[in-house]
Image (tube, rainbow, N blue to C red; front, top):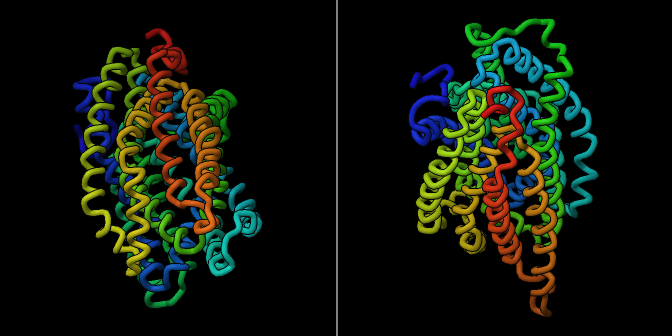
Length: 461
């Protein structure tokens, strides 16, 4: 396999192709996670636990505003991978131009709506007064510079659809290094606090976006970028929305459910908020194999369905999922063995480390079953069925998670624990993950996703 450039996943051993494509994506996702993690470590160490809580409390709102990019990115990856697999150059070119234009529009919308809505949302979430100002300034800076992160995510999705996961990795590693250096400089030397880490993130994301756009401009042997195609045709913008909207809606609903649950989290006070931030930062790393394999499965399925190779799709789904579960099991064991040490990187407060580790142990087994959800959902999305994963996500994150969280916490309220047992927040998460994996496996086996392709090769498979 070439180190840089496109990869044809319609040939060769299925699981080998998936793994070789996943590794750069996994490393890239690790680098992406470092953005938020380094922010948390630096503000926790140099500013304090309340600043750490502020950065974490901003997360659900930031994710909610990012749903437009999530939808465009997923739709772009599916369209590009299927057209690339089907060797349809003009359609591939027009779909990429469509993605570039729609990302610019989405960035403009968020730059306007984001800063105006942050403080009302933070008030709605009952964010403690001790951290609400930090949360607000962090979010406003991120939203005003959202175009960098938005373009990187969409353009890297295009590169992945073309089978190039290495270039996106290199650009992200460069940006992550810039982010780490600027975090330290802005916070430790200039004393900018939470605003400093937000500014560092924005600058670094713009660098990764520029590098990704430059890479695409050199790939003239595969597709073309023409000015007239930057005004999207309804065929491609319609397909982009049809494929991407369910994923965007899924992310929006998930983010809204997190906001609702964040309100319950905030009721336990600053220490539990900070502990939740630590757990979620480590959780973000442990989840990376699942997300990476899921994204690789999307590209793998898209290219092979575009080429009419359904036999490779089903073989890759089975073997790839088993491989991913094995990797996740090993990582989970490592987290349980060395989790306290990792959590000590965020804070020197022993009570906070103990509380974080107790929460982490509760959800640890769920990481293995999440591989089933992500891998098989990736196959369905790559085939063009983004609706089924959307409904499964709605069921697990809204119908199940929210009532479970509030219900279990309510059942544990006592005179000694007037707010209830905080660990029930994580028990509800584990239950919803397990049910989500079962539903995903059921609908994958039913096979309705096999007839959803947008190109003739997949439809005839």
